[in-house]
Length: 313
Image (cartoon, rainbow, N blue to C red; front, side, top):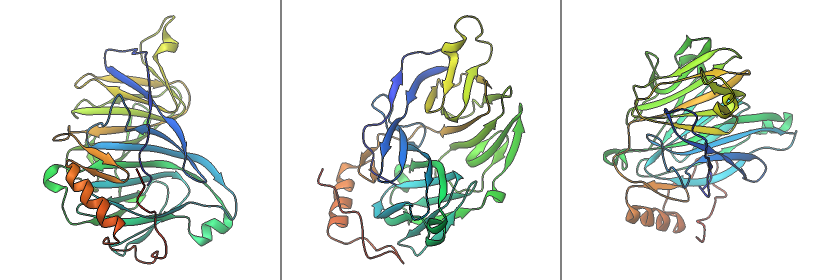
């Protein structure tokens, strides 16, 4: 995953009392593939524990092309990779080596420190692929920021699924719609993949303190808005809709759509982000910078011949 920079812009229309803010992701070229970055944004730094949210692709990688995110470090967060299309191969300094495919979850807890790389495997690179997915960072509570690093892979078949209002929902992490994901989280979390066919409805649960809805594809509108202002009630691809706590929101798909629900309990204080480091302490980030610059972080097993150097600023 890459360093945060300027994130989303905000839309000014608030078509429902349940909507606090609408962020519009901005495209970023990360060297061979494009992401739409929504968090962090000037108007909103986090939603629940989510402090970083990139919509990656969709992009066509022809034979011979691929992703090459060289080894880089993280602290005090969990990285979450979730794909709709394609494959990414993960390696880290714990010795993990795991391909992730659509519907699977790779959940890497950095804790006191970890390094990893994300690449396209030689076999997939030779054939080419369509790559599309979400990469997110989840900040850890202060009590867990210095925990032991770990990596967990959860295949698609292990994640609970539920049908509600015509929408097909997969619970990626945390709990929602009466189901709980097997992914181990450090604080109360909401993370759901929602496929909403045209005409189907989706009601966002109110049992999480902070919530957002991100439109991956298609278009969603607030059910019952009606009238001449109906167009103002539409959310389209790239919109992140930040919701007012405790206020219900029911949306209808005006075309075949896909959305992510994200959020959870409010974090226990401010988080600072510098490059790939997230922490409640600026001093801890300075320590992490020195460690990476001085080569004191364990190397990625099986991918130790290159790395991303510490940025100058």
